[in-house]
Length: 75
Image (tube, rainbow, N blue to C red):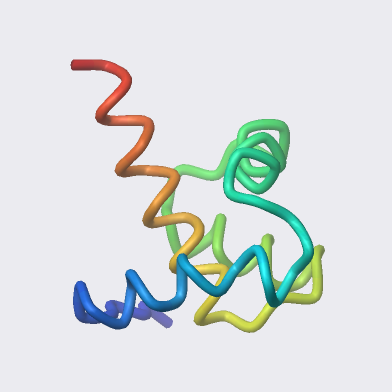
């Protein structure tokens, strides 16, 4: 299941993650980087949701934001 949020919804989800989870984005990014090596974003978001008890919406937003940050570091 692919969750593609509008840019506005994505921004709102990302802004709420620290409040909802008690962890900031760098902590979640480390969790993703130290987690299993999945090829597909959907696999990573499903793992994140299942392993860390997140809604799939927040998990998908985290994975998408992590990918954006990772790409930005490489440029």
